[in-house]
Length: 156
Image (cartoon, rainbow, N blue to C red):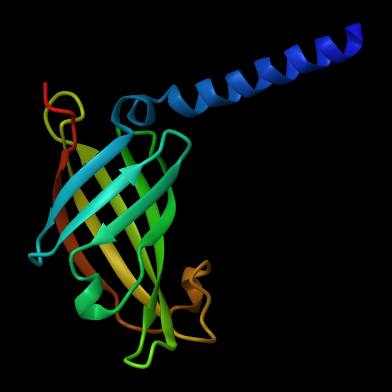
């Protein structure tokens, strides 16, 4: 019984230590949250950065271009900013899968705190036969854009 308790405590300490390492670089701990973004193209998007590195997105252009919500990961880039990647599904008019979209994003805070972010992204479409997890398989033309974002907060 005692060895089981010791094992449980050691596991908990390792888990806490791993989480502290993830959050130690500053950006994840301070800036995880939800942001309303204005893209250079005129589109709007909502991104949620989880403290665990999860990254969720929704775009105002989803209905027009017939693609799904975006899911991905993000991490601190080690120099005060962050980088992330989203994947989504694009469909043709009949609802069949056309391709997988991949969005690679770099961003940083603007000013002090986490109230505003800014950055740029590159969008690539991977048709069947190309692997969105392997950038070297991409044969198309990337689309780039910029964005600025404001953090969602509860009004007081």
